[in-house]
Length: 509
Image 1 (tube, rainbow, N blue to C red):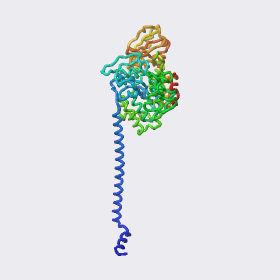
Image 2: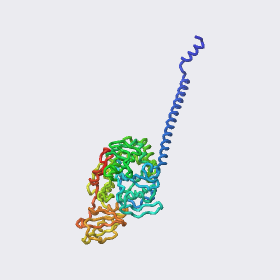
Image 3: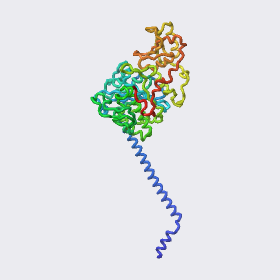
Image 4: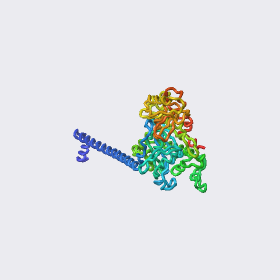
């Protein structure tokens, strides 16, 4: 080996001096810090990109959302006394925005509400009930705002879906429908949303379709009775998955199944919505899943200003993710036929609204928050009656003298303002009735707590009038009555749960 090679080998084998070791360690620390900075830069860059992507999605959703004019919502509204929330959902057959291709009809036609339901989400956020209102239900439509800024007068005994058409515009009048529902139920509607044909069809496509059950073969003429012939078969009997146009056809079909009534169609619509909820929950209501759904829904959705941003809409949807399928119920407002129309069974409907206002489930459970598993309390739990701010006129509808004065004293003792007493036009009343004007139903219910067995009766005149009947003659000094805390069994027994079999309870008639 040459001397130069020996010297090189010797230098390689020589132990490192302290100064050399310090420089090596310093270089290693710099390399480590450099790698850490690179890693942090990559992570931060990914976070920025993710945030920018989410921001873009929210901007996209915000651009999709349309709101209706809140100025059309009545100023005479029920008190917001429930701990839960009430959401009015309207299915519109408006022909604008590409909907005419899906639903037929003239593009210049006025907007109509084809479907409507009031969804009560209980305060415990574990229970919910959707109450369908048939479109041909006879109701009073309170004053509503017209496109020129003027307001209509109250209309009596007209079809419920006429409220959406007030103003005769292509986009419809959701504020008027909200006013009508609040007047009908005495419940404050916290949010209103309208979904049209196009939005509904798109939403079902996004979730990959919904499982439905068809009790018999259905043909084109069943969907469009104006056809001259039966046409092609559009649904075969049995269970099947439907999406898009087929899903829309399924929920719109009325003839050829059951008795061809709107009541029967409502039952099938309830089954479909239950199936849609079941599908969404099975996929998981996470932000990743929710955003595509929100994107599809908002493209053809009109909401009140309180839901008019992506943040509000997504937060609202996420707040309901813990509601159990079995505890999500569907019912139809208590009804009876009146000729070719539908009339409301007032006593049963009043019990339903009172239960919802008290956050009682259909089977009587208290779902008002932390006490969600409590059963109904005894009658005295109704608490004292306060008539502060409520004015009442009292009429004696019997031949017993001094009855109006006695009732007036009971009312003033509880803080009511009695504006007058006197005799009713006739003295043959067997039961006490409480007449109430537009927007006064909630206050009339408070008055009714002093008159056991009293019947509530909507009237066109303003104010509240108590007409005493024989039932009040022998009663003690008007002790407070609790009012109904549970829904009549006839109504509750007909409820559908969101986890029910798709083929069960599909048709009326």
